[in-house]
Image (cartoon, rainbow, N blue to C red; front, side):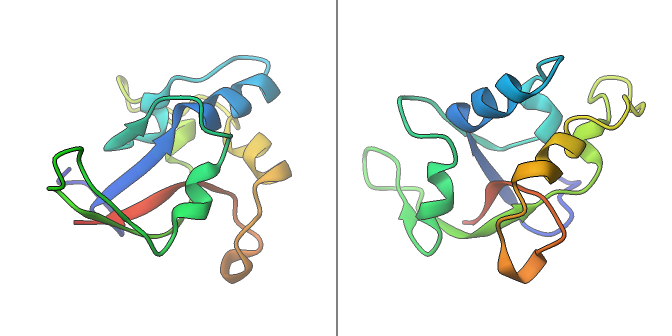
Length: 117
């Protein structure tokens, strides 16, 4: 989108969102994270972390996207995408409790991976 802050594309798997929602009192919609690519299927939660350094292609072999790194999350997932209003501390607070997984950003939660076309 025209409002990307660091990378042009973000990928999140449905399995990762399902895992996060199982930890929340109130489930959140995928739109809260503003991904460009959503991966469906029976992947393990956070499988996308293992795709870093790889290229993803469409079934016909076109549209390659490079998986650059984990997405370090800001407060945007705590903002209603329809109204632009803050909705409290979740889901970032819960992500902070278990998704500090990037050694380069050890005090930040990660969710999804950044892509480069």
